[in-house]
Image (cartoon, rainbow, N blue to C red; front, side, top):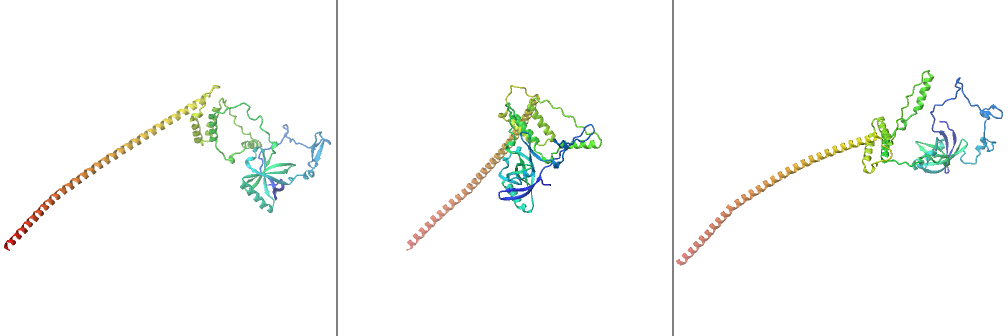
Length: 395
């Protein structure tokens, strides 16, 4: 790219030699003026009014026209000696958040390139500092005979400077907004939101100048001696009497053009907002509502009601089925538990009876044995007494 200005960026005590280059270019198709009768070129010639002759570019200079009509000549040497520090310097005066800059002020964009190897280090320092702070630099510079305001920001690995209009060059929007008081209803805002959601986002690289392409086709056809392509007839605009109808038609058209993409979120959001009691539109006394709008809303309400009723019935049936299954399972578990408890009780009673029966004969045997032992003891005692008595007698 060809540089259009050479100078330096003044960053405090740091000076960064830079070159200024245009960052944008125009692809517009330009035309020349011709004489329609014979096709001859129409040219503008620079003629001196005093001598009534055409002059060359080398003979043309600058001058300031005073209030009385007199001309005050200004030479390039006069401009080069202007008492301002920005004649060959981009002087940074402040660093501000980027949201402080009104887009209305932004103008032509320029690339700032480091001029020579010594400028690489300070250039990179300024670029990294701007990128890390998320701020932009406000600077003053002189270009094409006037001092300008600029904004420096980072774009990739380069520093870009946007020419800014001075604040007093931006006109206030007086008389732009509607004078009459306008009230926007919630339903209209909901449909506007649905339209924005349906249109969604787009890659700016996919956009192109269709007018320029069509113009180039016409030029190519004329150059080949062919008839230029005919443009399709303009569609007749429908007479829209209701803003709601226009919004609904726009949403429908946007969904059809996008092939149904992105309609789910927009439709759900619209239905949710329309179902809220607080956002129901009161009856209006002025003007009649569109029949298509009312019919569309009624059909949408009936469809939603049917869906809600069907979902409620299905949910109730599933709940009843789950309840029946739970009751059946609980009854079976209770029956099994009761049977098991009865069986356990019966087993315990059988074991107790057997134990009692077993203990009873043992007690009888024990009593019989004790009686026999007692009898034996008594008989022994008697025999002992009888023996002792016989001995006494023998003595």
